[in-house]
Figure 1 (cartoon, helix red, strand yellow):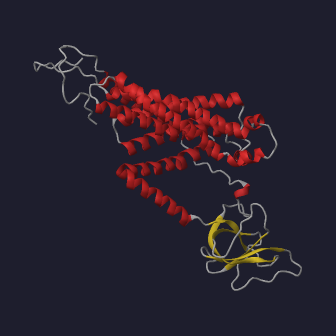
Figure 2 (cartoon, one colour; figure 1 turned 90 degrees about the horizontal axis):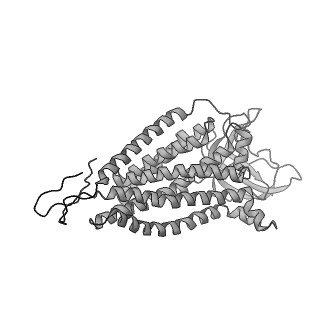
Figure 3 (spheres, one colour; figure 1 turned 30 degrees about the horizontal axis):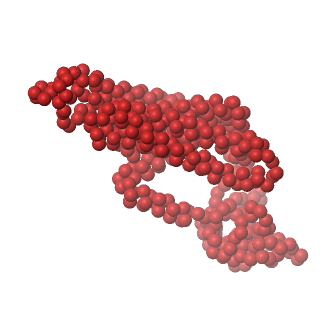
Length: 426
């Protein structure tokens, strides 16, 4: 990549010497730093790469035979209240289910057509006692049903979840179409980068955490891989993107330090969240505090990336609009944009976390507890600390990235002489 650090025209000011051209030197420093960090990230990836050690499937996710849960497609063809206790419950049959025993209790009965697997074309019967957490099925619903074999070797089916494949595909397709239609090729590259980020999460980070690797190095290495791939793919390999990448990497490291310090200081355990309790119960070698830290770090990437790219773009655009503007002026003007961005993003960040914790806050609101108890509880404190750590890292990333971009965007090459002689570069 060849970068032109000079300006397309000169202005005579009668001076034989100009300021030191920091632009080319700074560019070499930034590129060198990013190269060194990239090599360190690759080495870290190799060292932290998960082994082939198999992890036992936790009991709640096993079938009765101890294997992984297998689901099949099904459609509810008949639904309604009626007596339960039929011997066809969960079994495979054709035609109509067996009648229930005399004096059976009332429940919701659903006859489901099995549409995949070895029993495709047959039917099964689901019996559900209405209550909280129970599905409310109706005729025509497409669902997923668990297929397993009992100790006697008889196939059994049970409700697993609603089938959401097609509706989700429509939502994802609409998202992709809108992004590509507005952002065009850059939007397409961003979507590809998003796919790569998901691949890094699934192929490297989750298996490494399951393998017992330390959570913070895994999060930092995985986050760095995501940033290198996403930023350069979506925004191109240039100094503008490099300044944003360096600012984001520095801010992510700062977020990691802040997360570690605040989690230790506030004694957050994460055990108020059911999924963390299940991890501790069934995957005991995974550190919950480490997992909490990793979540803080990865959760900060999206908003940091947004802010740093905006600041880098602002600085470079301002430099292009006014070739005579100094680095100080570029920095000051871009910081005015950054302050507005900070003000809007910080409360967006806090409200996003508050929205995620809304069901929990609703439960606390009817528990008759004081506001102090609610805020200092582990569940709410986690979201509060997460928002504050993200806000601090976000705020500090603005001047950091803006300063890097201002230095790279302006070469400050000495101006040409009016007599046609060119000032020598320092």
